[in-house]
Length: 467
Image 1 (tube, rainbow, N blue to C red):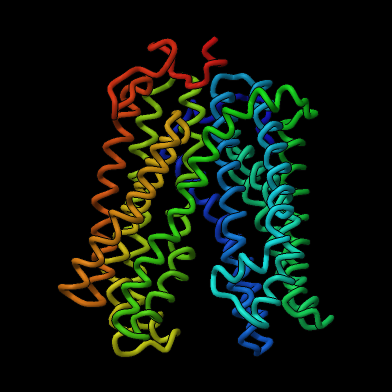
Image 2: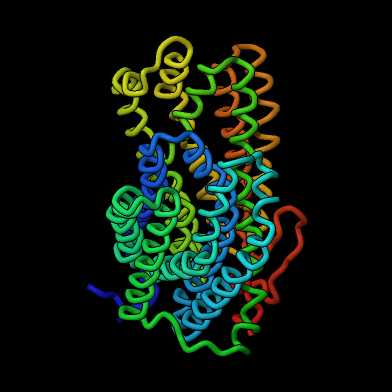
């Protein structure tokens, strides 16, 4: 049932329930997105040509940066719309949604125009050569021009979440995964299009996703208005002020992954194989953790826009409580199933030992990653997106390299896993401390001690909203 008649739904009701519903439904949509990637790789691998699988991997690496751009814009849309919704200003929420959608479309059209003429060079920078590079280029020539569709869909889904419609926000991703699942075998095998067929299936999935996302946002909330250039220009700085730091925060993650993988490589192929399995397992079993930032953001945004800082603080606490319950439960399940899981991947020797270590105590460290996501949601929605960038990069550099080196030197490959977890715990503590300082006095910069709001009594970061 649509909830179009009541503004600021997160400013009322039980916050733990809001956090739980938003996190679980967001994780379903996130798992659907990961499923699309896995579906493509699975069907391409069935063709039995190693260069095809390699081409898909190279293409995915470059596509990550387009996804990061769209993720940043969706975070901006969610934060801005949620704040306006919290103030009960539906007209402003509609303007923000429209402006961010236009920016996403323009950016999504410009990116392929700038990247495709140099696609061979870009693939060469990440090590692609020969047939694999040619196949990856063909894949990207089909899929990169539809970046704007992906961006528009992400913005629309973020807007649905900003209005508190968690269930509607997960439907577009589920439909996209279903379309991909149906079309992949038809285009790849039946029509014999190979990797280009996989790209076409993804394009069709993106089209279906954006149609459903826009349709739900319009039918339930009239969430978008007719574009007006002067409003887009007016809202550009607000949107980019959140989007750019969010993009930079997003691209920090592969840096940490690369550092850990490089250190694991010192201990042989079994160690690398274990890390590869863990990296693919985490997005599935801890999808709820990974979704926390986007899920809890609208709850922060609405209450911040309404000036309900008491509920903002309570949301932060309830987010950490929900996170602890989920991680404890999932870690216990993984521990009980550690032997069957290792057997599925034919793991023995060092690979099995490392999987058992992760599926035991190290899995609990996912709480600390989730705490950073909750803190980043606080920063993005309370006007400090730059803090999210700083925390993310610090965690994946200073919070990774020294720790994996030190613990690896003591305990070898197991020490790398432990060091990654310890570094996450340290920087989660920093992130939580900083977030609580921001919540306690959102108009005061906790790092410099100066006030940044035009009026200290106002809890609204936008100068236009203050006026």
